[in-house]
Length: 269
Length: 269
Image (cartoon, rainbow over all chains, first blue to last red):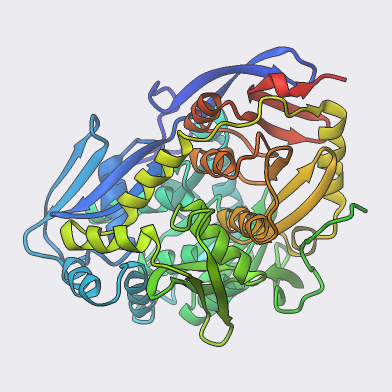
């Protein structure tokens, strides 16, 4: 069993519900399904988004979302993260007004919604990141990591219908987060890394989700040089990975995988 | 081969790219991957969102997104949908100013982003829908439909890493849309139904994606009484389906499935 810093808690009754129905033969069945609830995120006085989440680790989710959307900068001083389960809100407070609030204020005075601004900002920061060239992962480590992830007790094993993300060092999973939204799982890891001062330079990031542009951009922004998924690729995900020099490994299941970018970090042992 | 009104075009070179890499043995491989590109949506003069999409049927995607987000009402008169491939934008024009633009204007003058408003609006309309109680689907039809979908030529069969949605009548697929974002595939179907005056009252909706709250809300808003997925459920998805009287069938693969809501529409033949 890997020695995780933090991971899913499949025994938490708030995260999984039992529901009754019928199977294909009309027989009564009862199955476990993950919960899903809204969580509205505020940055200081500014409402940012309502997310659908399984509901564990809301503080890490909030911080990670703001970081990965570039609404919060790694240097911003976070003074408090206040989660209120009853009204389903989480408020991230910073010492000063953030760049995002300022941009949103300007944007809404001119031509509307903040979505476009946010997207533009994302790509701006992406272009500035240099990933460590010297990071290495052996094929044996990769296969051992895949096995360790699949045998860790998880909400996926308990209830299915959930995405998982893992930050690992070599074959060792360190942070394992799950959520009904795959980007929430990524964001929770980013939030944990920020809160505990963990860098991504020698890490491997694993996701059950596809290797889309958004997943590649987030991994690069987190400074992580190697991204692995059991799912497939999109063309733009591959292009962005090659541009950033990210090692991109997909369709990783059992002993099989395909590497489409940064193969020099993968050591064939 | 089913007789589709509209479906994927796996032969379209804009939708699939060939990329080269290495497999687990270090051998050179070339695989097909779906494309992914940004598309910025405007409603009249208002920028709404930038979506990541495979890029086919942008007009249907635009209309369906606005409808499913309640930014456009079924009664709104759409005067034009202008797609510009070069600058990756699509503009939906209506005869008058829409309710959404009015709400967004008010909202941005008070406390910020439109996301919260949009979410509240979604649930408001959900509560008003009554799904037809008399709709029926036999188990034979369901199994034949699953087989028809899996054997239809698709981008999924060509390149993987893509979600698909199908509007069907009994065992017959009618509209088959795919996209790298699963909600885009749903929205394209909603847009096609709107443009061609197709109602959902006697239809079945199939998705490869999970049966989350958002998928259930969209299906109910489209007036479709039966929702089927090869993936699993979330607890809130099940709750909302039961509240709306939606027939909810998940984990549907081969000859197996589980129904968790509205089993009375499913005829055991």
